[in-house]
Image (cartoon, rainbow, N blue to C red):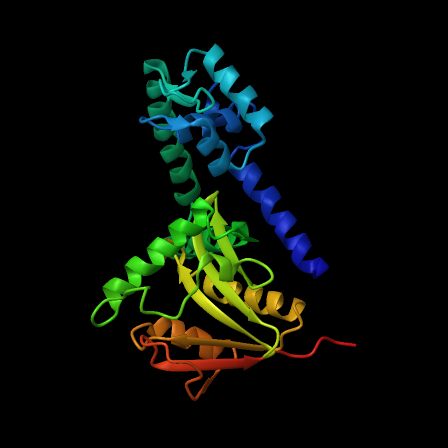
Amino acid sequence: MNITAIALVRRFQRTVTQRIGALDDRFLARDRPLGQARVLWEIGAAGSEVRALRARLELDSGYLSRLLRSLEADGLVVVDDGGGSDGRVRTARLTPAGLAEREELDRRSDEAATSILAPLSDRQRERLMAAMSEVERLLLASTVAVDVLDPRHPHARHCFQAYVDELARRFDGGFDPARSISADDHELRPPAGMLLVATLRAEPVGCVALKLHPGSGYVQLKRMWVDPSTRGLGLGRRLLAEAEGRAAANGLRTVRLETNRALTEAIALYRASGYREVEPFNDEPYAHHWFEKRLQEPAG
């Protein structure tokens, strides 16, 4: 990694943490640090399961427990088992005092944001807001994790169902996966294949399946999907790159895929990623375009 880029990121972090008051033990002039204030805000008026809270904030379970205990001691939060049969599912809820404190934090946060914007000209505010929006999107992109999952995993099932639902809406005449070329569970487990699932804050936001064909020297990509909420973060390109890396790791140098003419953004992505359109290589009934990419031989 470029040492200049690393230094820039570190300088940016120092400037932001100081400007927003993250270094102050009394964040927004209240009697608690930023960590406690953020947890209080994140629990929200409806409450939150503790494990979901931990996943969203990406906090160590021990540290989150200490934060919750401190908020409980202040009478702002109660943590219970939610009344369910599974005692392991714990829920954090705000007390009336906690709701009032959250409202006060919201008010002071608005004031703090105003204090940042007020000294700037209209043009500077526009530049700052545009830059903040871009930084937020890039930080989100860097937070996405891509892992190999079993196709029966709940995250995999979620992605597959969302994929089918979207194609059914967008394809002329709908989409029936039973008519499409198969990508069954047994085909997406090693050594036959694998499934890559992308997650953001512990929630599934994308997937791509690989069907490996070692005897023929190629890999076929199936079930490529990105959640609409994360489109524009470069996740589709990243999933493609991850799939290509897995193919190369398995000694395969050709990647093939087919797609429907309705998926114009996917077609643009494949072409921009070095895929060339070829003659049909299968009888997929929903396909109008077939693509292929030859991967570079590894150095050495």
